[in-house]
Image 1 (cartoon, rainbow, N blue to C red):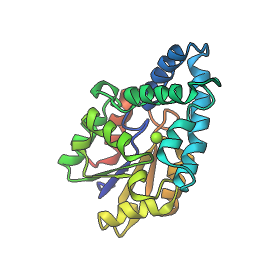
Image 2: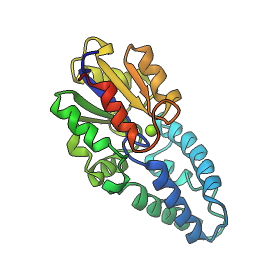
Image 3: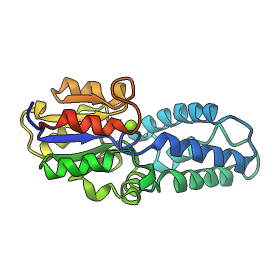
Length: 227
Ligand SMILES: [Mg+2]
């Protein structure tokens, strides 16, 4: 197999340990609100709420501010200062989740990006989310300088799984044969199925398909690159 021309990579839970950050943020928020719920329950409920609010934001039904507030609706009890509490939740959440350090980068990811760069394989981050949060994650983790292009749904108006999000990246690098590109993503439903339908090779970034932990990016590097 020859080296791919382009590697398209997801950000959350593929390059950055976003679920770990979310778990920490939600635990801190629950303490702040004096809510007693375990981290697993908080995370499941938050993800459910986040998915539906994100869809509404993507279709233009609600603003970014409303999207962020809706994610905490269920957690903040009714009361005169409810709106302020929701804002405090969001501020705390963004402070923790949008400022990952290098220690929150997936093990081996930085080395893999470096190797791809030296092999002249172009790398594009394709991420769903508001611009400020995703840009902040890339900057504070140090990953922003290690990729050739970043496409964020909040900036371009199309989000995965919309095929136009993928086509836009292929066009950006003038990739005529989609099979010369590889998409790496932890979310199969959202991101890999439409990429595959366009002819892009795909790699599901999960322990179900790849080795767990530190070797995952190392393994990926070995199967992406020849020799
Ligand atoms: Mg992801």
